[in-house]
Length: 70
Image (cartoon, rainbow, N blue to C red; front, top):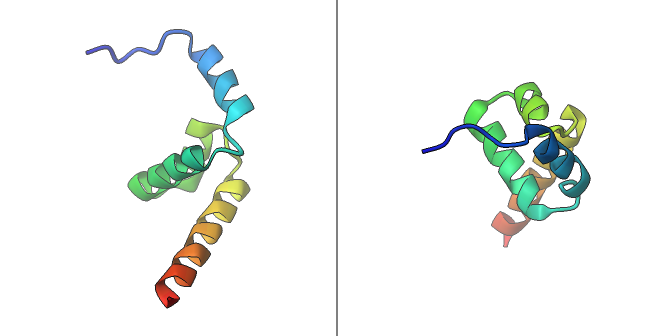
């Protein structure tokens, strides 16, 4: 199994240009936060600013409260 990413800089540019509006990408970022328990590290990995990740966490938690209240 290959573990090396071909053209990592191209992948980084793709992520930077495409991810912010994607709900799927947000979910993956939140899964990384849950796994690694380190927002700053996930920020470095994904290129998403830490404050944005904290906003996404708050949005997710608020959605959960809303759905659990029903």
